[in-house]
Length: 196
Image (cartoon, rainbow, N blue to C red):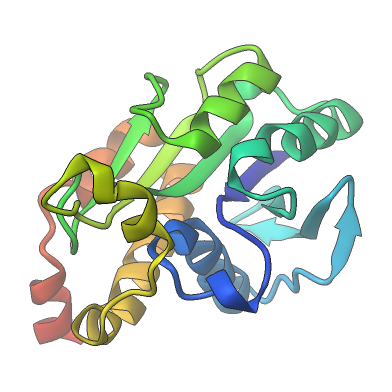
């Protein structure tokens, strides 16, 4: 079984905030693959299904971002899922908006959700699907920036971005991280809009 985690904060207030990019990607994947996220287990909203032959568990922790690892550790223990079988979708300040990057392992880059996951899972060897959200002019503005809603202009691109990120998750499952990275890195979302 593969565990696909979307990081975000629960509640309507945060639904379209930049920090909830992981939730939005997971919602898109659930919609495309007809996997309803309609159960709650260990402080996470979950849905179980199949993607291209792989049994998957989709999970949205409901513990708020900086405690995400608590719920995910309980799920990995309960379902006996190895760290290498965990894929995490999340926002990334270090990437410009309209960019998606895939990564196997690595640090946390100051992302509180990733810090919690690494602490509670006891390692960092999980796969990441990173959606760039850009960054504010000043470091002191970061906390407010990530909790703000996407701008009106960004919202125009968001459906294409979440669709592209969901496709990246599917490609990781179907072809492995290396092939998925080769396919998705360098892809411009503006191209996707022209093609779509």
